[in-house]
Length: 494
Ligand code: NBP
Image (cartoon, rainbow, N blue to C red; front, side, top):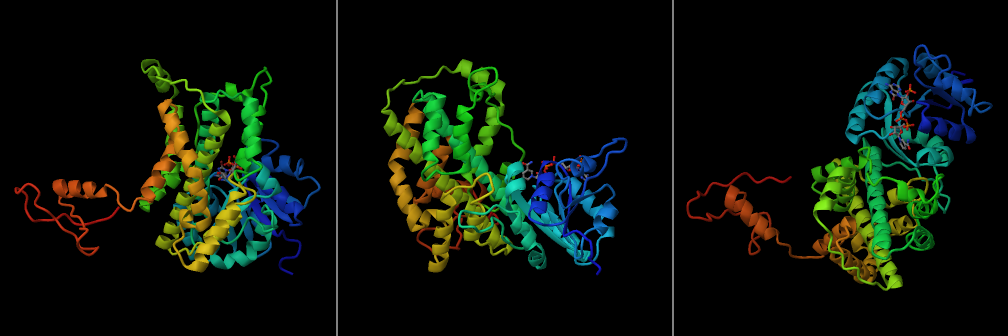
């Protein structure tokens, strides 16, 4: 009786994501209460505009007072927050706490920093509530028609929110919802962060492929669009490949192609940067995403690049290429580099899982990204299958060691190498293609020149080294100059 006439779920924050998620929930048959803070003095607030507009006639009830909103939701309450990441979430939680009952569930669907989520899970649980940090990907379109949702946090809350969240998630081609439980604490937001980092990498790789086609092969926008459209029928089938073809064909209202009029200075909001910072904290290589982030930063230094380009005249060879062959090489470089990027991203997830005790299921995460989100692609099916096979065989979870991908990368290597070499000769930057190739060469090198680094560290700072003719874990110091002492620096890892 307590829950009679109450909503199934409450949603706070009626900006682009919140509005569309509320409509998606209502379309799936849920009764939804919505709330947005009101700005004093504004006659028609966000809530009225929504309930009187797009939400009219739907099972959505609007509230402009937070207490009435909370009281309208069935207990244990499920309240999803879709507000700006950062202090807004903390402020909102402070307002909600006095109004909640024990066991109520708060879901933060924004792009929160995972460390904030760790703190919030602990805070909410200490107060007797439950907290889920859910990464949501797919933008406006995904929010309305099916997003990829990555929830993690208070485990006991999952059975209570599962049916709502899975109902509004995208469905993969086999019908599985692109939403499943990720793990404890901030794991959902961490996975979403790496998802966004991978998105940065995919976009940089596609941009480089476009640039080589344009600058080395001299293809026009329609020819390039045809190539991307064709690639979208094969192994590179993905949302980003598809939209690239559409972008290349798009005409400007004033005439010509819009792509040619867009300034080459990329913006960023921070999730790529966070991915790289956290990979560094975990001691993991995430070079491709780092390159993508740095290239955005360098692109934004437009006037510096303009000045530098006037000082250093290029020495282009103007070589003539066999275009079909070169296009195949670009395909190889794009596919192989993408593989490296995903291998690096998933390896960071594995390390985070080990470090924080999350027990992440990498195959399940790959499956969750197959629909709804920006990096959705056919290739994620192969990734999920590769991780599943590695788990069964009990071998290390690294994508490049999976037999299927080992074979794939071997096939791409000649074209990938050729493309990077030609681009370097022609002074055309392909930083992500070459970063991926260098990672691959380093990975497959049983020996690297790190012995020199260790020698230098020991020479100037007594940082010690391990020896090839002794057991691992034994550290030695050499008195290199005869002037130093025998005292070692403490050994530490970063
Ligand atoms: P925004 O990130 O622009 O946030 C706007 C919402 O936050 C509005 O409802 C606003 O209320 C509310 N808000 C703010 Br700002 N400060 C508040 C406070 N102190 N207390 C209560 N509410 C506050 O909206 P969005 O683009 O819909 O994104 C929502 C979340 O989803 C963000 O974390 C975002 O990073 C994430 N996300 C966005 C996308 C996307 O494509 N946009 C995709 C995936 C995830 P107001 O109307 O009164 O200003």
